[in-house]
Image (cartoon, rainbow, N blue to C red):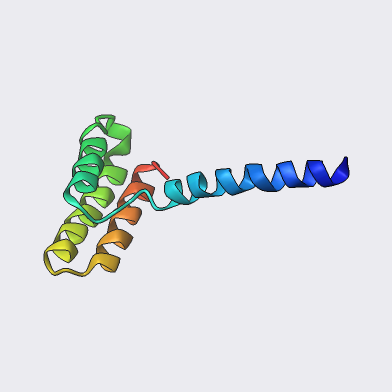
Length: 89
C-alpha cells in the first residue's frame, strides 16, 4: 500500500514540475513578451504607482536596448526587473 502511495506521489510530481518550470520561465526576450509587459505597465493608472511605473519604464527601455544588441540574458534580466517593480512577480 505504501509503495503504491509513493508511486502515485512521484507520478503526480512528474507531471506538476514541468508546469512550475514553465511559469518560472514565463519572461522571454521577444516582441510578444515586450508587448505584454508594456500593456501591463500602461494599465498602471493609479497616481500612487507613479514611482513603480517610472522604474518599470526604465527597465523596459534597457530591455529593449539589450534586445536590439542581441544581449538576451540582459534583456531577460531587465524584463524581470520591470515586472518585479510593477509587482507582477
